[in-house]
Length: 189
Image 1 (cartoon, rainbow, N blue to C red):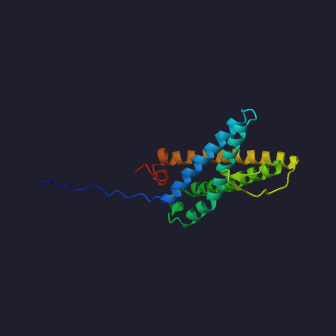
Image 2 (image 1 turned 180 degrees about the vertical axis):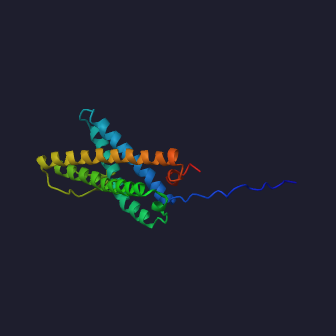
Image 3 (image 1 turned 60 degrees about the vertical axis):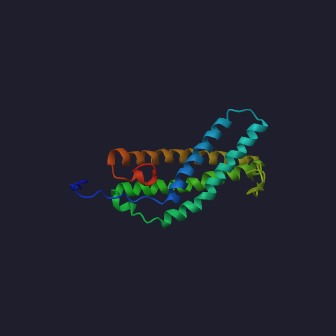
């Protein structure tokens, strides 16, 4: 006969988590950003070749996927029922809102500037090699150079924000121990 042990103290409270859709899009977006950035930085070292052009197409596809997933991410985030701000100190809530807002802006700006650059440079974007997307601008070498810089600045700013976001998550995991990190980490209890 098994004896029941009387629990001492309050019952553990289950931490609310984000829905699987939002969690999946969060990590998929991160994978796409890391892959697109890594690929772009590697491509800068390669000589011009058919392989380099094909890899640039993959880079564009990843950026366009990030752009296409953005409205879905925003919709899921708006529908999310978690009362995040009530668990954070006021400065944490403000910082979180600013970083998330800037991240979403970069998720829009970086791929859009890349697409604009590609259009102005005269390189059409053909999604997955089968769906030609419209050129957003006419060919203009000076504008293409400016848009390339804009795209790169947006990407570097986004990478900086991702690093700040990751540091914030680690702060909640290892310093605050408040369960905020686990909301986006489905492998954690």
